[in-house]
Structures are given as C-alpha cells and as structure tokens.
Amino acid sequence: MNRHLGMKQYQKVGLNSALANATPHQQVLMLMNGALERIATAKGAIERKDLELKGTSISKAISIVGGLQASLTTTEGNEIAQNLDNLYTYMADQLVQANVQSSQEKLNEVTSLLLDIKSSWEQIPTEHHNTQSPVEK
Image (cartoon, rainbow, N blue to C red):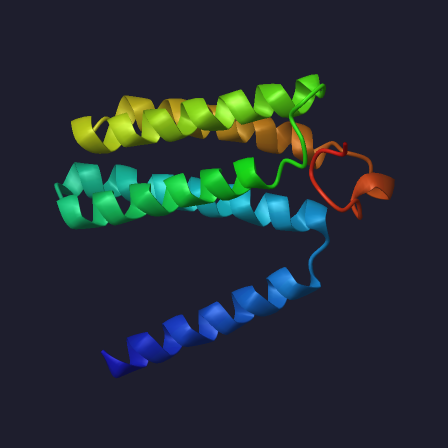
C-alpha cells in the first residue's frame, strides 16, 4: 500500500511539472486526455458495478470539463467560444446523467464529443500554440 502511495505522489509531481512547462495549447490537450481517461475508468467501473469508482471518476471528468469551460476567455460576440461553452455545459449535464443512470451510452456520447473537439484542437497550427488562452477575445 505504501508503495502505491509513493507511486501516486511521483505521478502527481510529474504531472505538475508537465503542466508547468506546457504551452496553453498542450495544457488544454492534457485536460482533454484527463477527462477521456476518467470517462474510460467510469465505464469500466460501471461494468464491474463499482459505484464508488464510477462516481469519483465521473466527478473528476465533470471538474475537468468545467476547467475546459473556464479556460474560454470570452463568449460574448465570439461564436466559437459560445458554441464550446454550450457544448461543455451539455457534456457536464450528460456526465451527471451518466452517473445517475450508470449509463455507458451517455459516457460514450461525451467521449465522442470530446474526441471531436480534441481532433480539431490538434489541428491548430503550431504558430498558434502559445496563445494565452484556448479562444482569443
């Protein structure tokens, strides 16, 4: 057990270091990957009927989606930012429903939406990776 705790702490330090040295573009990708990992964990927990892990994983995914939503600099007058804001709200709602209903279908839907956004995000040209926020004013 102590070895497991040590490994978790080591991973946390590695993650904090990676975040500190990442561009804003890379940070958003890390958040998306984190949300996708938590959703995958929740799907496995549903299959195993592990309600505690399901709830914890979905809660973390909701928090990450909230972080993505909070990273939008402005939505007023910015159609892309407004659409992303609405989509993140929808995903958070679907994650809540997935938790209540133990619904892998809802988790699959959020996964699909996140993968679409991630794919588009990965196509942003390198010269735009150092912007201060995911969506400029």
